Image (tube, rainbow over all chains, first blue to last red):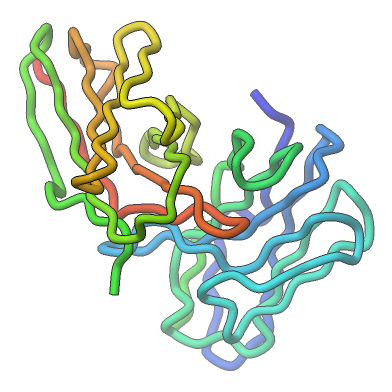
Length: 113
Length: 110
């Protein structure tokens, strides 16, 4: 299994509070991704990173920001959580971009009340 | 406006039989397609892929077929096993990103 962890694994928070999810990898892969999974939508890309300090938006980036200050960590921040951001969040890594096999973390279940 | 559709949310198949999971897409520019499998409470894992220069790719019990003119691909699992019970996502490669379908939940019963 690829060395990829997500923390926390579960979180319940209230509307309007900031939330940060962490993705940590030990594979030294260049690319990292954040997805959310919702019923009826499959997995949707939020943001991705193609190197330290290099990030770009995905298809559902509104309300989210990311940071990557070192290769192994990719942080996803919800500045002011809303109920529509209740979801399961997956981090993924790949060595050569989206066409390469992406290895996914175990997911973080976030509930915004 | 979904570019990738998996119209069967669920599929139930008897062990030993063939499972056929379908995926339709709208963007004719897609030229590389992947399938991921997901067990409950785990992240998706890569299963098999196919390039548009091929119409078939096989890996053990798993075969993916691509019909570019119909914008359709299918995943065949033969023979199906109880351990194949999972959600399967097709994911064409768009510009720098995968575009996941909504998934099909496969249940293989004894």
